[in-house]
Image (cartoon, rainbow, N blue to C red):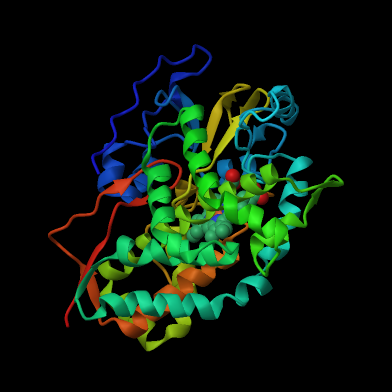
Length: 417
Ligand code: HEM
């Protein structure tokens, strides 16, 4: 992939003092494309903990643990929705009968009190107990993907393993046809690599996602089975039965939140393991340490950057944020903050104390964290058990992509056969 062009810098508004300005394009920063987390460490050391960048129309970035932690729990100022709930309802009501509705990914774009209404139907479906039941299938799948490349002595890890694994798990959970895997993988790629952030372009891309799921969604309404779509049809929102529109919003939300994240999380983990043969040896000798390794990989290489939209003016840790401004929760920096994690750049399996916030914090904390952890742990366990020591292919350097989910474009692994 070619690196996207830098977004043009806009002039700094007068009310923002110079000390808060730092130039950083979270989609196209050049240093990030070469080594994403080296750039995060650079920002942690050299940028203000709350800064304004002139890129992408000008926006704020919260880059310390304290800033991210406080903002993600201050729902009165930091909203998850670019538009107030009432305004969205007005737009929906004003649309002519049958006109296509914009997607409103639920529950992530809702603030209290509406958020809990839309999160509630998902809680049981994603509980640790429900996810536990998927373990056998996930392991079977991980084993078959690893075994398919084992004798080759090399693989393009994203294409061969970290993409098909979560996409297949997602399709099975939803009761969607697994034969359509290729189509879904192409949609994931198209959605996440496209840098056109225009609302209409995003809606068009999401429409495609909803369209391929539509027949199955309707089918499950008429013939419920033991899957997530059938369960979601039973949901009620403020006494109203779920509609096709509600189901599409959920499906699109889970598709965007649950696929690219796991793909990139696994790829970042594979890079760290490939670069550290002594860690591979330690985990092979004692597989019980894999869950600790998974957590430390998530902290060291935190990779999601959720946005917030200012619902009111706010003097936040000295910075003058104004109503309507966008503020990014730069979680990768929060998890590399030395005030919370001593020697943050060190990978430390025995790290004690504060848990990471790779899954966010507050009411929007990741609903899929139990599933993600199971997928990551099982994959690392099976890689350790089935592959000999592996390394990065030195002829194929890593290139990272930016955006709201950071990660490598591809990871080329090699091992001796
Ligand atoms: C390693 C993998 C993953 C990471 C690092 C991750 C990270 C996150 C983060 C940081 C948030 C909070 C966003 C915010 O504050 O606005 C979040 C929310 C969410 N995630 Fe994940 N996620 C992962 C996997 C998944 C999976 C597998 C699913 C489901 C299939 C999922 C579903 C969700 C949902 C539905 C929300 C919104 C929750 C709400 O608004 O109440 N995630 N995730």
